[in-house]
Each structure stands twice: as C-alpha cells, then as structure tokens.
Length: 213
Ligand SMILES: O=C(O)c1ccccc1N[C@@H]1O[C@H](COP(=O)(O)O)[C@@H](O)[C@H]1O
Image (cartoon, rainbow, N blue to C red; front, side, top):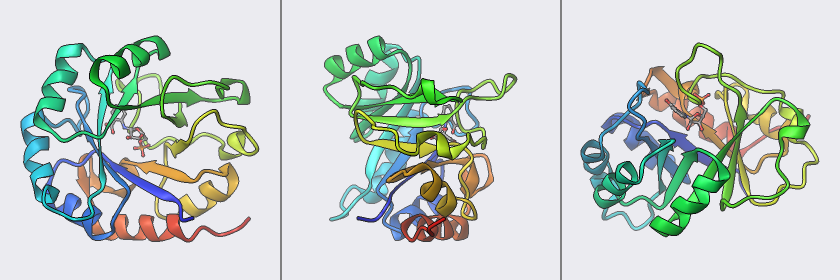
C-alpha cells in the first residue's frame, strides 16, 4: 500500500489546488492563532468549499493547540472537519473525542525511544520532533528527529511521521522510520502558509515511491 500523505497549513487556493491535483490523503487547517499558518474558521470554510462537491476528496484535518471547547465548536460548525489533530494531554484529547464525536489525532513529540507510547486514546498519533526553545509554537518548525527512533516500534495505533520533512528527504525518512503516513508543512512552502505546487508534487511523488536504504 502506498504511503499516505497529509499536507498541513493550507491558507490559500493555489496550494489547495496542488493538494487536490496530487490527491493527497489529508489536508490540514491550523486553528492556532500564533501560527503564521493560522486560518479563521470562515477562511477554512471558504477553502473547503473548493472540494465540497468532489467525488474523491482529501480528509479534512483541523489542528488545535490546547484548545477550548468554544474554539473547536466554532471550527467544526463552519468546516467539514473529519479529524481533530490535537496538541494537548491524552486526558484532554479523550474529553474532546467524547464531546465532539470526531476522529482525534494526538501529537507526540519525541527525542528518545522512551518517548514512544505503548497506548493511545487517539485514533492516530503524530510522531514529531520537539520544537526549538524559542519557536512559540509546538510544530511547523521544519525540525526533524532521528528517524531511526521509530524503526521496529510496535505502535498502538496508526501514526504519521512529521517534522522537517521535505521533497528531498521524505523517501529516506520513510525508509529509516518505517512510517506508512507522513505530514508536512514548512517543507513544501515558499513562505509560511504559501505552498509551492512544484514542491507539493515532488513531495507526494517521493513519499509514494520511497527508496530502500
Ligand atoms: O504549521 C504550524 O504552524 C503548526 C503550528 C502549531 C502546531 C503545529 C503546526 N504544524 C504541524 O507541525 C508538524 C511539522 O511541521 P513541519 O513540516 O516541520 O513544518 C506538522 O504536523 C504540521 O502539521
């Protein structure tokens, strides 16, 4: 089965069109106001209208950082979100899952094998690098972790590899980590939130045809 791809942090039509053309598995909207990729629910709704009538459409992921219920409610009432991707504790993720009845993905920052969980309240985990100290946001920093950390890990649920992926390193990242799904934001951009259609196409092609190492 080919590796699944999520492109995160869409803010404008050209990037979205590239994702639709490449038939990516998921696109993500960032509902975290301190991100340069932040979109309001109204803007995400406008963008999602472009694939509302499509027969085959990507899964629509809303990304939240320590959200209040009100923030999530505003997003899910405006945007057809299939998945809530959360940066929060497992306890809060469980609460959100029950309250909103949506698929939940939980971010899991790692820097050592011991950080890899053996259980999960979420349907998927996003295994990613820890943010630099001065970043101001927990993801979208273009920083990778040593991919071999996850090699041979028995994951409790399906997972995505994220952090510092680019068209020129994603095949190696998949081979070294054993990931079957990948998530990228800054590695396919010309500026934060502005996806480069050529980079999106190169990333998807490389992810779906990984090399062996
Ligand atoms: O993209 C953001 O601005 C962002 C903000 C807050 C939390 C997460 C964010 N992005 C996610 O971070 C990872 C890796 O991003 P990158 O490829 O290294 O730029 C990915 O899951 C994004 O969805």
